[in-house]
Length: 274
Image (cartoon, rainbow, N blue to C red; front, side, top):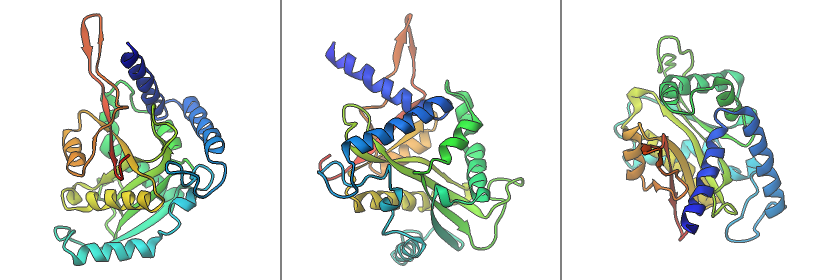
């Protein structure tokens, strides 16, 4: 019975997290509570214990402090020299931007990309698609983005109505783990999207590993993400990168003799014994 009770708490936590994608009131409440918890557990920036090293809730720039466009370019060049992106044709520019410094044009382009690649999956799920809440989530001041731009000036990577040279991006921020580990900070990957012609070329893997390197640079030991169960290809890709279904992922449930399958999984990757 205790085990089922614990799972109910975890399911409630995951529902709260997912509610931020379609309920603006819950989103604001969760954001406020996250900042309060940061102040309580880690009031000063710096090392306090093995689990809480950086307070990104009040200083998100510290998380990416050693990273900038020049560092990304150097890592990109190193990866190319070692053949990690040999299947990727074309020339690209990488940009690291915090949400507050993301131009409205680029933010709108990223939202259009999410709408193009994922709106159908949201609509097919029980949570539905809610444009305003997604826009608010993406504008969170703690969110960071790595943008991938086509140097050749491509402006239609996501269809003829798409007017930006952004051909992909990944967004992420430091958050707290779900119960029973909600005292630990994790890096949560919110979005990763690539133009269809760039998929399967190593670019998505490179973006994921770069965010993981950022997490490790501030001694954060876990990355997490959410994926729709319907997206079988993405689940397999994440598994190949070392991600597993997290203990906080909601369980399928039985109601009146019917099995209600979860719409999504929470997946995670840990290192250094966490």
